[in-house]
Length: 300
Length: 214
Image (cartoon, rainbow over all chains, first blue to last red; front, side):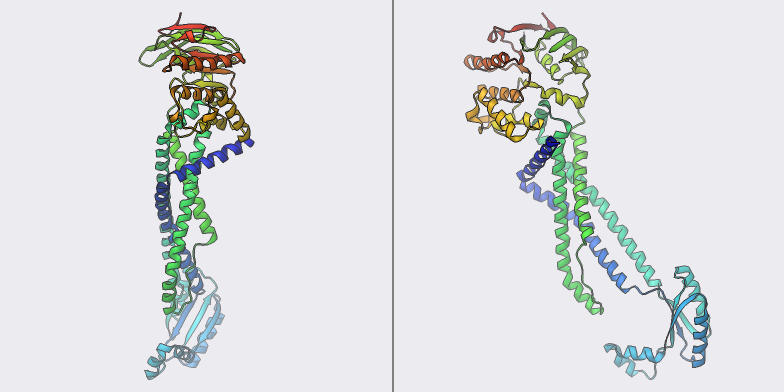
């Protein structure tokens, strides 16, 4: 047990010495790994923000019914009764045309336009929440309600949510694909670094073997090397993403403000950050192990 | 301690390095293997350390059949042997102390104990004052003594040396031979392959000729 700890400590120290022995190589490798990993990590950061934004603004699935402008009080009452007694409907909210007009007038830009109009352009409307929120059931309900007398238009408010969902799914797949490709890239970078190390360290490896070194003893410093290089590369990627987040924050704030949304770009979350660094370290270790199998243990 | 039983070694294109070699070296014995260059002396020593495997017969060290050792068991065999190579195989990127330390680091010795042993081994070969020197700064005789220090630092009970006095002038060669005699005297089994057996007058001598024992 004690010997095991000693061996690992020595291997770790040796790996660190080898890393520090060629600082330029180290910096270049870390930049290559960092930038490669910053792409999927940055994508994940943007995606997480987009999801948060979508989550904030996604309304509950609902159907809006717009009545024709000439619908009278009685028709409105009839429809209201029908909707309230409909078994497929959970709740109904009536929004009168006067209410809508008042709300729209509060909007700075629209006020002048509305003032200029000869009469209220807005129709009476019902906002319906269905019992069954599945997309097909909602579509069916919408087309049924659209056939009620004096209902001019039934609009499914969930339609754009579904499109947004599909878009975010696409983005998620893109980030995963990017992570996979650049993960393979990281393995390749480590593979090559270790290959060069094995070639330059041939004498030491040979002598160590002759003096009774086990395969593990020879492998360990290289594996630590790959692991530490991956870990540091992951940290560089994290720093790049954090820097980009800070840089983009004020322009994004400004843009969100013009849309009347309070939205601040947040950096990578704790879980995502830990995952990034952990994955980078694991891939570094994997690249080193593959390289060792290829270049160290193929011959007898 | 070491037994060769009808041992042959044939290299692929049909070159016979050793043919039906049989001998035994007892515990604490000093054995010199003589013969012309290319007679198979190095091959014989390499078989004891499982660097080469016999193509016929059996090599036994402490009763263990070396030819049948698993790859994973070889390191533990080598830790019980002291090896002095013909080309020394010193590491030129580290100093005398660290070269001598290598076998102990491999075996996982506690650092404090290892340090004491390294100093003792370097003292034994007369290099203690030069422990911070790089191997490139050492003379031929000093490099050979460093190779011996590295071989004995793990206190093996078998010491194998391949041409340890080659390329050394007479005085230095006698110095180096003296060190091997000292180890023999404290009970270490010593096998030395050399073209110049006269340096070890007290030793039993085997002579190889084109792979055969005379």
